[in-house]
Structure formats: structure tokens, C-alpha cells
Length: 188
Image (cartoon, rainbow, N blue to C red; front, side, top):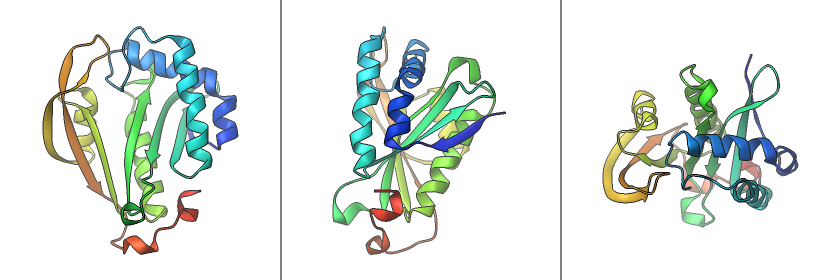
């Protein structure tokens, strides 16, 4: 059985080794998530460690999926803007599923978790970018995300080849004014 839970900054720091393993596996598996292969383990640990400050400041929320053996099998995060005029939106970032867990619906579970949490926090608009023609793009399309276009040569794949990226958005939760959204609602 898989469980998905939101991490506190302290829980993230205590899970940083497992999260680094997931990040390295995702990059080694060919996912374009901002890193080049091979990903140095020290770099992966440092990257995750640096996320704790953003979490503590209410600018990032991270969820982790664990399997029945309590191993980290996936993660997803929401990045919240720090500008008053954009607190109604968030960016979905770093949806990752370990290669051993792919094709079992975990990506969709993590995506749905983030969407529901965003709506519960008063977010009404989500956006993301993903490699064009990737399996992730298919997931977002099937989950009702709207593509707004592709940017050519936007990011390099883990092997260093420039590839287009598709930008998506999705409206979530009830329509509400941006002023109703507060840092407290998002855990900050």
C-alpha cells in the first residue's frame, strides 16, 4: 500500500538521502527535471536540503509517496509566488516517480494530491512546464491540464540535448478573489 503525506521541513531533512535517490533515479531514467546525467549524489542531497528553507518560509509544499516498506517512491511539490498579486496561483514542480513504481497510477495520485491541496489552500490556478512529447505530458493532458504552447529548445534533457517544453495550466478549486489567499492557508 502506498501512502502520500505532506512533509514538514524537518521531515524533508530527515528524508533527504531517500529523496536524493529518487531524484537521481528520475534523472537517470531520462526525465527532464532540471538536471543533467549522471547526477552527482552530493548535488542531489544539496538540492533537496536547500528546499527546506523555502518550505519553512511557506514558498514550497512537498508531498512524498512511500510504499508498504516505507521507501520513498515519488514526490510532488507546489511552489508559491511571493508577490501579493499572484497568491492565487502556484506552480506544480518536481513530480517524480521512481522507475520501479511507474505505470501503477502513482503519478496521477501525486498530481491529484497536489491539485486538491492547492484548492484547499485557496489556490485557483496551477501552472507547470514539462518536456514536450514526454510521458509526463501525456499524464497532464489526461488529467485535464490545458496546454498553452511549446517553447522550442527550452531545456536540455538529462543527456544535454535541447528539447521543447510545453506549458500547461489548470484551474482548481472554487473561483475566489486573490485577496482571500493567505500564507497561513498554504502552511507558511
